[in-house]
Image (cartoon, rainbow, N blue to C red; front, side, top):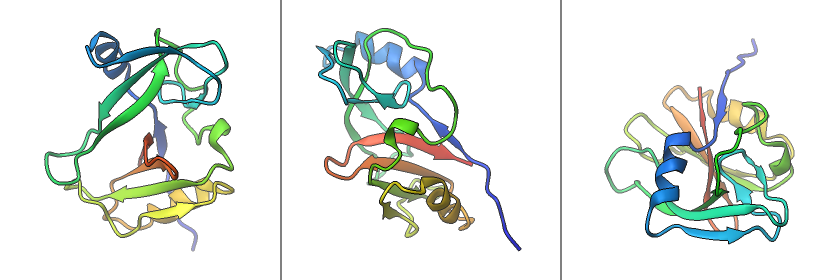
Length: 149
């Protein structure tokens, strides 16, 4: 029997981006090209106006709560083209960090090479204790996006 788990890839919410644009610590910059945009889940094109800011992940208070740098468009954008795995990031190695309902890192966490991320995500979600997955950049450890059932 095959089990298919439906999931949704989630960019940063518009309200997070609006707040970040007004924060004192945010930096406005111009894209050199290739910066991973967490608003529309694609790589930036050279010359696009960007915002670099610290994002605190939506996890419960505790030892696994993190804050780190992310890029987004400086002005509101239309968001991702779809709710699937970002096409610009296909083939890019990523860490898929699994979390349980209490916001603790789950043992189903793994590194994947980017060739079949949907299969990796579906396999992680076969564990009923996993409630969400955060994709992270392998080299820098930066948060990329959240995956929910």
